View 1 (spheres, rainbow, N blue to C red):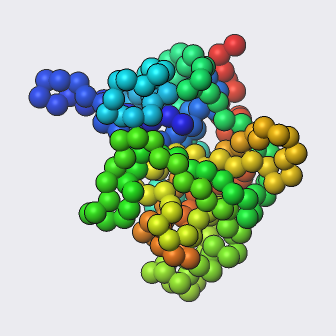
View 2: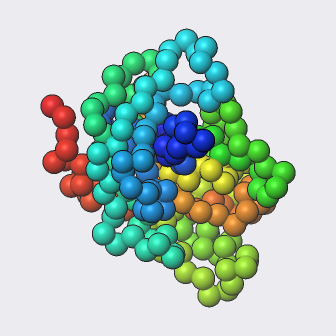
Amino acid sequence: MVALLRMENIGGEEVNLYLCGGSLIQPNIVLTAAHCVGSYGMKFLKVRAGEWDTQSEYEIYPHQDRFVTHVIIHPDYNEGSLWNDFAILVLESPFVLGPNVDTICLPNHGEIFDHVSCYATGWGKDKFGREGRFQNILKQVSLKVVPHGICENALRSTRLGEYFQLHSSFLCAGGKEGVDTCKGDGGSPLVCTRPTHAFTQPVYYQVGIVAWGIGCGEHGIPGVYANVTQAVHWIYEAFTPYLVV
């Protein structure tokens, strides 16, 4: 889990403003949502890894910051519908991996994780609307992946209407009241173990990227994520030229 920061000069002082979440898929490569970075110049973007409590410097392990040198947006990204909401960030130098900084595995193309219990993380709001508060300490929520057709039917019961079609570049998770990702969690990872994983120590794969939702934590209404299993070929092709050996 990483934080995307936007550098701004406020009153003559340079400050880091939280923008979105992301994930480290290689020591110098971050995967996030295109809607998080599409309108910002890379010279204003910074990535922070190893953060936990954003208001404290007293964690056991310090965080690390890196500047972004390249922003790669999926060629079929649609800003209006958020179809193919994928972006790759190339960093100036690799993060040093350690107890609080590591990479997440990517799934196979087309792999199915329906009904699997997964985790989403982020510093976004704890609830929808004005009452919601951004989190100082990294939150984690447990969510189950919802099959595409079931999610589409659930979303048709909302203001999206009975003819809404859920694009294949999305997958859904959640639907339990009060348990969800929310505003500010965009770009953050949804990670799952493989359904048939037989090892004692589970291996997690990034299945989704927080994209959008109808409210947050509404009963029976899952959150919508960019489907990493549908874009994994493009992801590899996009970052491979920038790998640091």
